[in-house]
Amino acid sequence: MKWFRSIPHQSYFLFLTGLFSIEFAFLAIDPYDRKDWALENFLVLLFLGFLFWSVKRFPFSRISYTLIFIFLAIHEIGSHYTYAEVPYDAWFSAAFGTTFNELVGWERNNFDRVVHFSYGLLLAYPIREIYFRLANAEGFWGYFLPLDFTMSTSMLYELIEWAAAEVFGGDLGVAYLGTQGDIWDAHKDMLLASLGALIAMLITMGLNVWLQKDFAREWSRSLDIKHPQPMGEDEIARLLGEQGGNT
Picture 1 (cartoon, rainbow, N blue to C red):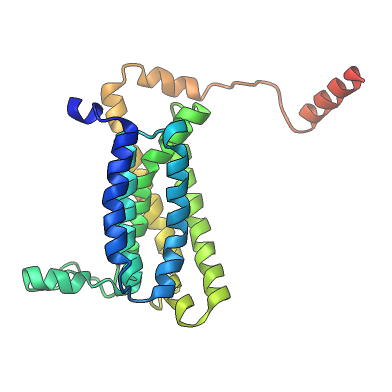
Picture 2 (spheres, rainbow, N blue to C red):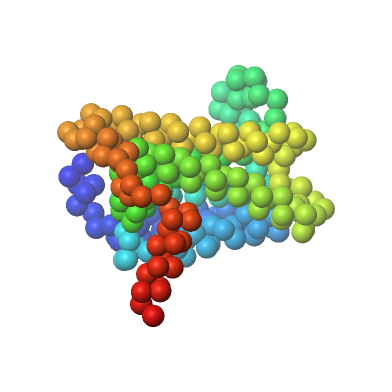
């Protein structure tokens, strides 16, 4: 652990970015559907821009950077082949003589489901780091809010997929949406992302219960009422009264 902590955060970020750039360049060569590849990577480039912008102002932990880049690396495989066409079954069959789908009883290409689950499992902790360091979300809120954010952004992504399919239509819309004929595809994707985030937060909470001596006190303190006075119309009246007193 000491050698890991000895690596400067910015240097570690640049190292992971270099590895990801190699994968990105390799998988950008002759993708299955160039338009879908571009569409899938639009948000990735925006996210990378955010990471570059934040690396000096808000460096993430090395664990968070690792989780983020593992997720991005998995996503790039899906964007190269399109999610519904990733040939993981062929790879598995070449190595073990049987398909993975046959082994676990799947009837469709579930690579997209794996990525949605990975979204929650791998990104909930970096999200928790943002909440904890920016909003001081301790105790209960430090675990609930990352789960809530993961669930809401998973829903938002499904809406983005729907909008993109409506705007672009045709084969590109079908490839980007990737439902494979399942009318409950969006619901299952959101469920898996939520489940992944729940598992990540339970693991994080378990580690903190073990390592954090004041865990119970912090949890209890996070549920204390911070502002006892009601808001709504009472708060509006108070603010109006303050304005009247200042004029």
